[in-house]
Image (cartoon, rainbow, N blue to C red; front, top):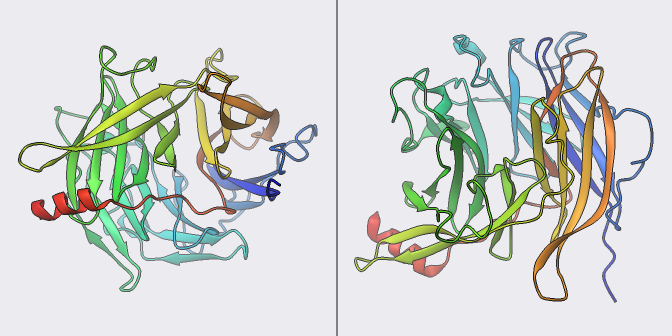
Length: 383
């Protein structure tokens, strides 16, 4: 008898832009059948928590500048959300050095606290949680408006941020970098970083134990693209299930999957590469719209996911919610089985629209496969 699945809550951090800026947490309930509860209601989706309300005084323990967006990630507990205010890559203003605070919000108790922020305020950066550690990585799009250290790790015992080896993709082109960090995956003792810009996608990998950066080979269309076009970059935090990485593609409504290959050369050096790259058929998309689209893929347990999609609109902005399951058809080929797809409106009359930020479900911890012995031994030789 199949075990009954519990109802899960999907939490969505939304940033309202342009001014007046605001940040809020929204919540959806998804039942055991994968159906969005109250999905057919005509009422707009309401926030469960404002983090700084443009209509009234800030709820933050310290002043927050009115030009920021909130970068978020879970760390330490499935319900503990860490929030970092940043100006964003398209804002050239010089930040106030006194305002690089970090906040924690508990989705269960609704408590909001301020803790020590990164040592350097970054115009655009990414919070990453991996194997019990919290990282802050400067986006290459911040170049040359960059402060050191550009890559830091939080030490909760000491309550301080410690510098790490810098990201290898800073300042490779004169002027602003043409590459943005779009997403990341945590697996095998590593953090895989996805970048996308004017040229081909790039992946780089940070090995946590050795604190070293490594290139990742990506097959071209002539090699092993398996129908993925144009490049296998991905958005947000990828989901790792049974050694397969699932993620939302920059192409609206497209989910990709791949594996991280680890081989060695004659000298014993580990070589990382993308393997078994696959693009699932496109789901319902807002691609016909001219306005900017943001998406996020959330893990619902096993091979079930929730794809969130939105595009900027007026007064009420639509949020498409699609729950799905990866299954095998009669021929053994993987495909997407749509469980439910609904559209809910979000009231944006206070602003010009919103973008999806960090999305997650507090019902599950993020899966982070451990490093195998072969990779550990090879990395020890490099240290």
